[in-house]
Image (cartoon, rainbow, N blue to C red; front, top):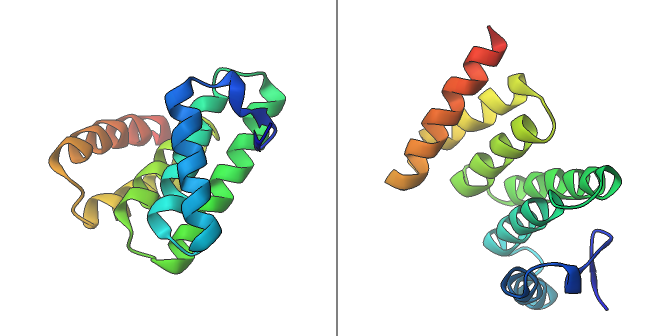
Length: 130
């Protein structure tokens, strides 16, 4: 079995595991594919939330590193900025960093449905900052 940052893919819903596998295939041939790096990390993080604290911490570290890699390749990629902002706030409890990433995400003009979600989360982040 392949594992996703220590999580066996068979424990994930089949469509999530299949999507992660597809991103893995893309990254096997194109390791600098920003979209594949970003969305694979997002799926790993979302999937890990159903597991124990140790696996969630591993997934968090892997996801943050992957988003960081995506942003090294494309510093303005709004999807990576949005997901990183969400993850560092929801899972890392880092409102200050989240605010920076979410603000940069919004500056990148994400799609309307994403914009609404990010604006809502940014209000939560700002409230947490006081």
